[in-house]
Image 1 (cartoon, rainbow, N blue to C red):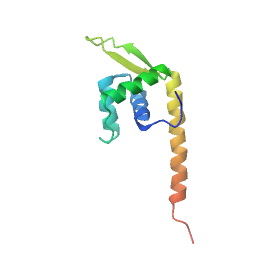
Image 2 (image 1 turned 30 degrees about the vertical axis):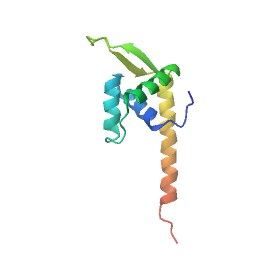
Image 3 (image 1 turned 45 degrees about the vertical axis):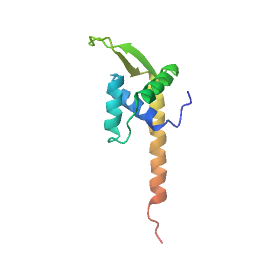
Length: 107
């Protein structure tokens, strides 16, 4: 999986998992909440991204102990957390440059 830049859905999925491990439905709802309802992932989009994140070893699957249905949950790996930190740093730098470019110029 190519690292940076991350697509917005992948970034939001990783941010959701940075808070705590989650199962698929919880990720869907958290992404929608974080984006103020702007990003609504379909289950196909979510599970396609999860598959790529699992293949890249950015996240890992585990069984929730407290789940009677044996639901699969996902959590960030150390590699996934490192990539997320790099992307947040890249976005901060980009925002800083944009702010400087858009600041009113003294004449």
